[in-house]
Amino acid sequence: MVTYREETDTMGVVRVPEDAYYGAQTQRAVDNIPIGGIRMPLAFVRALALIKRCGAEVNRRLGLLEPRLAEAVVSAAREVLEGRLDDQFPVGVFQTGSGTSSNMNLNEVIASRANEILTGRKGGRSPVHPNDHVNLGQSSNDAVPSAIHIAALTAIHGRLIPALRSLHRALAGKAAEFADVRKIGRTHLQDAVPMTLGQEFSGYARQVELAVERVLAVEPRLAELALGGTAVGTGVNAHPDFAAETIVLIARETGIGFRRADNPFEAQAARDAAVEASAALKTLAVSLTKIANDLRWLGSGPRCGLGEIALPSLQPGSSIMPGKVNPVVPEAVLQVAAQVIGNDTTVTIAGQSGSFELNVMMPVIAYNLLQSVDLLTSAAEVLAENCIEGIRADREACAAFIERSLALVTGLVPRIGYDRAAAVAQRAYASGRTVRAVLIEEKILPVEEIDTLLNI
Image (cartoon, rainbow, N blue to C red; front, top):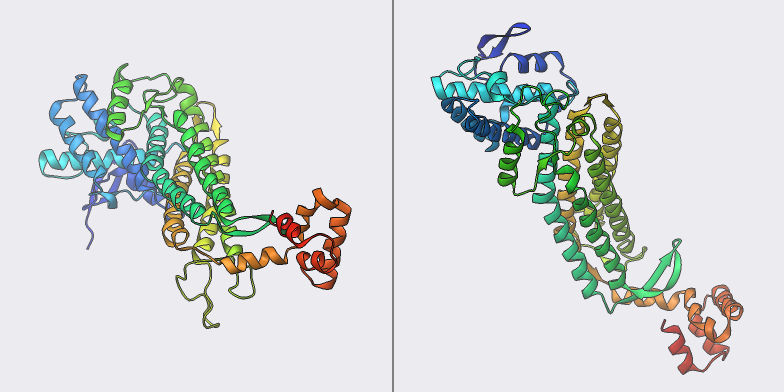
């Protein structure tokens, strides 16, 4: 049976589950805004906890927070960072647009756990108060956007970039492996001139390489933190040294060059850096869509498609057709890309909602941006490990397509002219013969020269 305790805040009394660390304001957010059931990402919660931990250390050093209270806050925040209190963050994404519900959820959890450390009893607002002590020198309006930047850039550096570099290595490896596999190129879904399978894969590798550059290019803006601006950017109620010293600790902890925003009013009123980051992730999603679709087509068949490559067989592909194997990983990647592109639309719309001194859609920006990073990380890892590394080239199929292609006449143009070459292609198509057969049978050119010209 769940037991409750009563807690009082500025809005009155509320009943809070006895075994919960969170307090009255969190409970009101959970009870009064139960929309969707989607909780805020734990990566965001931990980024916010890092701000609280570093902030408490700085406030102690500045003489604003009693050492014993600061130590308790730091200890409680560390437990959040270690994932030991993950079940204490029930606030949903769809809440107040400043993210105040999430900020107070964390303030109350840390205060409650700190009080338990100090007194043996969880909950309450003394000796550690969620606003006066945990939130000291901060506002939701500067802490939440800072947490979004910290969580996003930490995930990009720690997970996404390594995953993309692994994918790039896998694709570049296949480009080298297939360097001597000649195949037909295609434009407009029509036969074009010959190329190598290695050249085709080198294009995919370069797409991923450029994606890494694009994503990293947003770092200078994401590295700017709004911390220190408090309510509207003026820094009211914050010690003048609080933000700079706290950000130094955050940078040291993460190994990322976070710094105080050049203009706190921009940093709180606009979420342009998040929109920019989301756009880079969307571009990556578009690149993965191109690659995954090509892999599906190149591996189509096995007997009635292109079949120029063989994808790894991961699972039965049909509940009714025995022996059918589908391109599971490319299809999964395509769905990830679709989700990320949709997330970017949400972030874009939310980014437009900066009214005067504050954006009021920060929670949904945090959720979609961080989900995109997570999804793309997993997609890149799975694509590299479970698909690209196991791809084999069907050299016979590639060679056969080249021989049957009418586009081989392109190599004849410098020798016999465009019109005569087009006529050869038309006769080959009408008769069902290859270009080579028409040239030889009609004795248009010597055999040795034909072999040279068709080897384009």
